[in-house]
Image 1 (cartoon, rainbow, N blue to C red):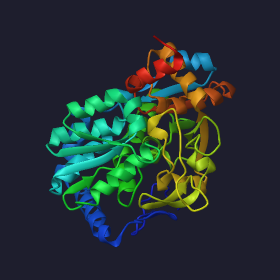
Image 2: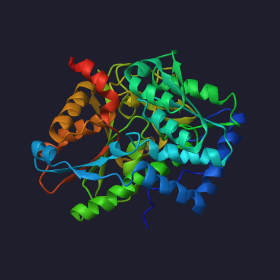
Image 3: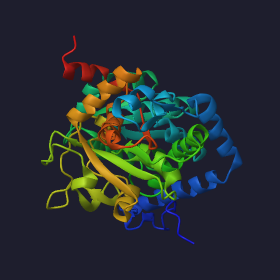
Image 4: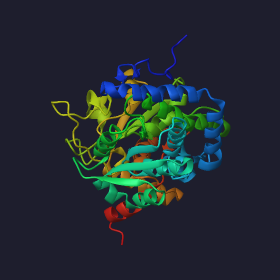
Length: 400
């Protein structure tokens, strides 16, 4: 019997050769405790019942799988479906795992959840979850992203979170992760590090993947109901990679389904102009894991850029690194201009304003759909809504 690609990491937290716990020895027991607590919670009917109830009655799941008729007709004959994670409470897929993290932190007796955020959606979702369960929240955010995503900063503050503006380094997502990790190691016994993607030391890549896999589970049921068969393509943007693996995971063993992760090629393929990690990077260490990394000759992370704050990260989740090497998932890239064009196209054709992150996945679908026949089906993960990007986009397009 063929091995399933939906496997868990080994006992050391590796997916193939990627992942692990590349952290100071003093922190290993802290992360091992989280892994143990998570394993127990997974098997606890009370935990699962509470979590599933919140997904249904608080988040609003299942999110719709919407047939984008106008877009499909504009691009050719293929049918394009959008998995509407933008309709979740807080406006993105991030709420799926932040609720799980908050419930687990409370179960473990932690007094604070601390995390990084880029586009602000993870920060808003975590601040929301901590307000719900009654735990203190602290969010670290790069200064550039604070300016680009100011509405989300206000949302986090209204929800009771402390927002720390990070002014060091490139002042973006990587630097926010550095800052948050530095704060975490000062009191790891009382702080739960609510990592915002499938990155970091084990068990976070596995745990966040598991919480996000609800996306693909729903999409599979929904497409079978609407079309009577599986899709031909799944497409999702990739920064850290949580929304992508959330869609892909349930379909990994379905060989007929092609999967495409879309990274940001930014302004160009020159150093510092993009965050196309799986396209241009090579394996290295970052933030407690071994994974593909945009790095200099000394193994230090390179500066990165994307029009989408949630994608400007020099690393990627180790699960995606393993899927790249195995060939099960193909990784492509989209530049800033293409993403901005896709943002405008979906808005005008379907009345749906997408996040700039999701616009990368849309833009790649726009490239490949016109050559497809009418029997082809594409599902795009619309990972978030574009409310947070409106001011930035308006400035870019010269709106007054």
